Image (cartoon, rainbow, N blue to C red):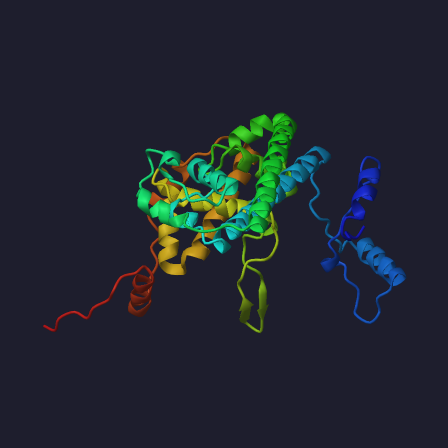
Length: 351
């Protein structure tokens, strides 16, 4: 069966319990251009399937699919909230109210109290009663930041936005309680995944909802990383590589792993990961280094779920301390290797 939009889902749910279904990506069963009709498509798919040329897509079990749907909806609610925060910030900016210049969080406790006062009246007021003792910004600078005037239309728009944000927070809280109750059956696997540095509860649930708990569906960790879009593409012709960019796969799991990688790279508690990141960043740059660390985390998760054992940093440290194999290189190659490591080669003094 060819996956087309969302139309394949009800058919798949109906036939799943009684049939062995092979769900194929349209990219891999595409007919020849100019000879494409619905009838010819069906014949072409049946023909290549008969010869074993159709590879099925990874479809997790029904309970994992339900958890995935809930987690992706949580991701959408988070983006809706971010969008509303940007619109609220725009209302303050066009009204010449610069709270973002004096507060690190415009939606924090103190900034929200000042915003409530601004929505009550446009009359000048003293901000000192609303300030917290821990605020480092001088009161005079905060007073100057609220020296603006908000028209009635912008004030009403800001009230609607804040009301919508409160509704989104309530919806997200209800959804998270449903997610936690749905994820209870995968508690042992979640505890194992949370032993990986940089991964907390909802990150672990998000990863499990995308890849499942049965790692036998992936022949190796490399296949899983390729499925998640963390490996470079194979696009080579006549000995020339066209591109080595990563693919667009893993639209949900890839950003999640990148966020976890960014978190763990800032911490010195896990030298096996941070040292790897610093070494790669020196040679390949920040972006490629972060993708490499994200792949490193996903590879660890694959082995953790497959072997049913927690994360062990000693395995990485043991590999890093293993001396490299001796190999003969020329002087030019040795200089090139040192330069890639960041060393500056200076000519020796004569004599």
